[in-house]
Amino acid sequence: MCGIFAYTGKKGKDAGGILLNGLLSLEYRGYDSAGIYMPESGSVKTPGAVAELRKKIPKDFKGKSGIAHLRWATHGEPTAKNAHPHSDCGGEIWVVHNGIIENFKELKEKLSKAGHTFKSDSDTEVLAHLVEEKLSAQGGSASGRNFEKAALAALNEVRGTYGIALQYKKEPDRIIAARMGSPIVLGLGDGEHFIASDPSPILPHTRKVVFLEDGEVAVITPESHRIFRLDATKVKRKATEIDWSAEEAQKGGYEHFMLKEIMEGPEVVRNTLRGRLIEEKGLAKLGGLEGVTKQLEKVDRIIMVACGTASYAGMVGEYMLEEHARIPVEVEIGSEFRYRKAVINERTAVVGISQSGETLDTLEALREGKRHGALTLGIVNTVGSTIARETDAGVYNHAGPEISVASTKAFLSQMTALALLTIFLGRQRGMTQKEGKEIARELKALPEKIEKILEQRGAIEKLAKKYSKNRDFLYIGRKYNYAVAFEGAIKLKEISYIHAEGCGAGEMKHGPIAMIDEHFPTMAIATKDSVYEKMISNIHEIKARKGPVIAIATEGDKEIARLVDDVMYVPQTIEMLSPILNVVPLQLFAYYFAKEKGLNVDRPRNLAKSVTVE
Ligand code: F6R
Image 1 (cartoon, rainbow, N blue to C red):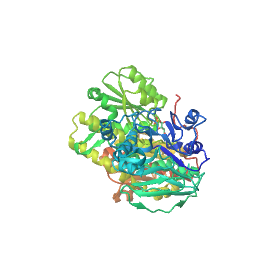
Image 2 (image 1 turned 45 degrees about the horizontal axis):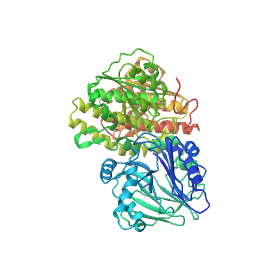
Image 3 (image 1 turned 120 degrees about the vertical axis):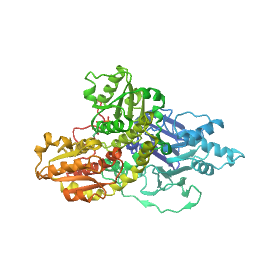
Image 4 (image 1 turned 120 degrees about the horizontal axis):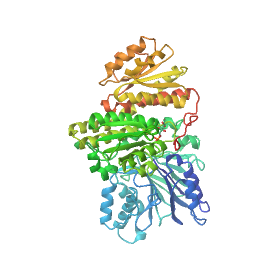
């Protein structure tokens, strides 16, 4: 998720200032590098966010139009070279992009053969060169060539997701936008027009906006805007008057970032999977591991190191990898691993899982692994973060920036990445093609299933209200959902400040069951899998002690509804992927519970998003 902002307007107005201020309100979408292009002044790009960019902009950097970008890296490190805007060979066509161009490798190859020289590792740069190619293919003199036609022809060759703004040095007033999967909104001002990823940077200037739909292209000039489809047919769309505040616009209309990020779950899983599954062969293609494929074949033990939510993703990964890839796996929290004398050798892989890529305990645990000769890998969301840089290889989550302190979408993407790793390592170790294909098929079906769960959020909100006076909760699960019990509990305690305890359901009778009475509800993760019957027995044990039970159950399971007090249903999937669905109602429950209490959901007390101290 990156942020884009473009402006074309009246003489005398400082486009540079407008663009920089606009970028500030998009910082929640990405902040690892930033850049700006204005036809009259050129381009400035830098690692870091808007403050860094502002420092680098010379005093005489002026103009009346331009495009700007904040990046959350997907392809290529977050360096000035990879920051947007990207340009063609001649430095005349400039592009800012949010999304992933899936066929960029083949396009880059074709364009390189045709003589184009690339300056970055970014997938986006191919688009600038492709437009350049289409322009020169029109023949005739440069002044007679049609930028709009060339852009349209190029966009028709690109596959993937994009929200795009394109500008041509020779036509500085005109900016072209396009949308396929990543949001684009036009701002309609008086003698000035805007393009942005969301309305927040537009709102200080105008409240009249037009949202583009997938497959649509728009052309703005200071005086006009036009919209058409990729097949050049015209689109007529009325402007919408927005009464949101800029902050509401950043949250996409949701009250909190946490809810917005939970709602992004389907998209996040799609993004983690994008381009990485070869379903017909039952294979996973993980570009970040290509350099260590041979070393991975020799690995006979994996140690996962992580903290908090990321460590629960690791626990799910442990079960996936042991059952399907048949590799011994241990999971350990970073703060423990780094101080004990674990037995590690060159055949051990230490895998660090971290959303921020900066968690000190995880980082130090990885360093400890490295000191003992282990291969170190990262499953990291933040491209270019310390863990991403220091590990030998890794898999990026592609979940986009997570703003809310409580981790939700990153957890989904971590488990999805671990499922991909399971196919990758499993197929190296005798996993059959049939098994690989089945996991791949089920992975692809997850986003729609998550959508079905999200549709029930109204009912989950009511449930959270019903239990909002309770002060203690027990969360129980078994096998793959053992870790989900811990994750459900941490979500509730960190944003509601009440006591919630995760527990293996079988372990309950060794202590925790003593707490159960009619005031102590249990959240039981009891979807239809190989331990379903065991979970039902545990639920009976709680009911016998008058404990209220809320179950996470598989759609169509009417039996369980007769046994428990309340049920949240989820669609069926294969057992190893069930945590990716089962955690979603628990995230929503925790969110609505804390909201009901009127707490600061996105910024819970005493917690920081990135823990860079011991
Ligand atoms: C819980 C939460 C924390 C983090 C933990 C690790 O919602 O956010 O438990 O999961 O601090 O952070 P990362 O993944 O950045 O290493």
